[in-house]
Length: 269
Ligand code: ADP
Ligand code: MG
Image 1 (cartoon, helix red, strand yellow):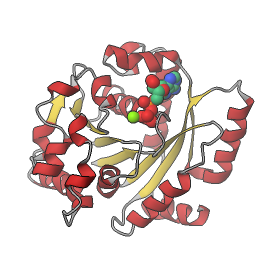
Image 2: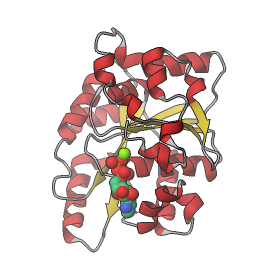
Image 3: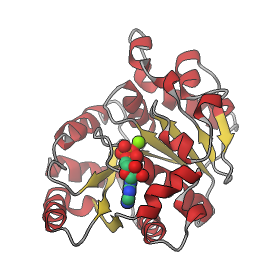
Image 4: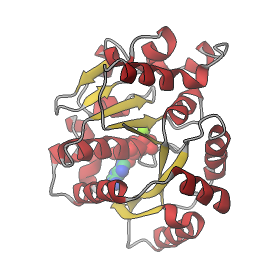
């Protein structure tokens, strides 16, 4: 079981779009057993999968705050993807859990327990993180082996990335398996010279951690969530679908050696 967190504390960089469509590609095309976890109180991944976030019986908040058994929060989306949804119940969770000693590890422990008792059997768990480095994101980082960082090639792209990498480094002391799997360029417009410049800068900065696949700006990707489905159920011949398919292949083909990847991060930052 591989657990992948999609994170960047900046909003609007394509985290949710990447989480939803990567999960869908793994499920629909690679025929993997996949669970998508929405860890953002905005619930965009939940809505984007065609689920009514305000009608959810349980969310990740019930797992983290009340110790609900992990598998009980799983619902199946109309397109057949398993999802643990989110809504405003996740907001303010930092305060609620501030006195809990092992607060960073609640998600990890819940997943471990469900797996050990045979209640879940996924090939991949994809976590859509909130635009912050809050306790929710820390829970994702403590549960995952690898983080994928979506980045938009615009002027301030690298701003804040230092904090993100620092957090990942610091937490890798708590979770020895934590590493950056890769960085993906989203909403890419190849005709825009600034985008090209920033893209080159990112390649310099992240080196081999950069995925070759460029996710283009594609209106179909922006439209799909309003139909409550991934790009593969909305318009599977679109440029956006082809790009996320290609990204999935790159992710599956890349040999992820945590030790190597951690060394890369230490070297580079
Ligand atoms: P985040 O989760 O990081 O806040 P989103 O995935 O929600 O970012 O993306 C922000 C907005 O940009 C959304 O309206 C989304 O539909 C749109 N968007 C994301 N990726 C693309 C893309 N490749 N092409 C066009 N629109 C996109
Ligand atoms: Mg989002």
